[in-house]
Length: 494
Image (cartoon, rainbow, N blue to C red):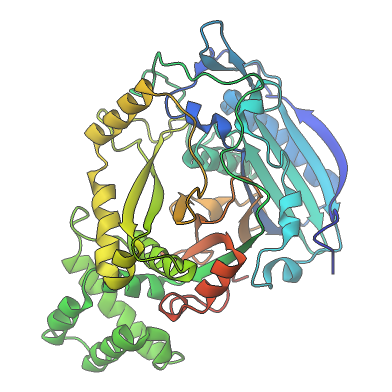
């Protein structure tokens, strides 16, 4: 077994990839959504793929060519940051290129990487720019790709400056890279680089000499685990959060299989995995009942608690319980939300840059644990629904009055931060020989209480949560049956 304390990846070669065509894009001024990210580390996400059906030399040549073509469509990523005399920071699209790294770790297998409960430390070495803050884009590339050969697979990682792109823009670029690799002559979704938006501001964010520092400690011992939730588990969580008694009343009086209704009631009360877990026919009936009722009775997005909000609420409750906080201790659950569709006029869905804001929801530990899941989920739900055009504009105005970097971290030992999204098309990254086997991230922006949401590989509404916690808190979460009853036995299906 490789040691986590020594390097397990050998870098074979490093080169610079330039856009195929020179860019004529004018400098892009960082917005009020971009600037706070300058103290955050580069985004690091990657995909595990089966071994390609051709030689590594052919593959590397192919990937470099495709990356060059991709940068032609995303010239901002091939540029550098520059601060003008007035203190405004721009992306200068000067075609200086991105890093491309070829590495090997031939002793690592799919089984070794995916079978442990905890994410192996070696994943951190599959990514360039480890723990590099985004302000460094003034003198470092704004993006990098690393291809790591494994024993029976390949890992392709993408690292992007967080002041240049949010998760939506990151996956747009990564998906386009894969699309071009598959032979597309014309990309399906062109990025929008317009800067005439409400996020454009004359405000200046001032930095000390040398730039900002990260706002969280990177020296704390942490555990990281992927928890998988099937579509059925997500539906049952949503059912609990939206008051399952109403469902039992509705379906109990309707023409549905009564045995499924009775089994559903027992599962909701006793923990659904404890009741006839292997009976596929029964579970199929239950899923059908849930889907029909949720579709017909919980279709209004402004009143219905969503599946993801239900899952977040359960995680918030269980982590709070595991932390053994005093009843009066205030806890915070932060969710990053995409603002492209929340403002009027709406931004282009493929606007390239950051268009996110953080929604904090606050409650005491005593409130979270003495109330039911519905109460907790409703808190999250109301905050998300209320984050409309007026709220976004207030957030911008508040930041302009006091410009600051984003306070990433868990400063009081009682906070959680949810990033990424199960809606991101991560498993669309087929480079030409099959869908990814798994999605993983690097060490960037991780601290006690940092959660990232990924879609499950099987799709269809399943979710993977990448959970980073202090060791003692993780142990408590793993014995919290209110949470673990919804977790599938395997976090990755290949």
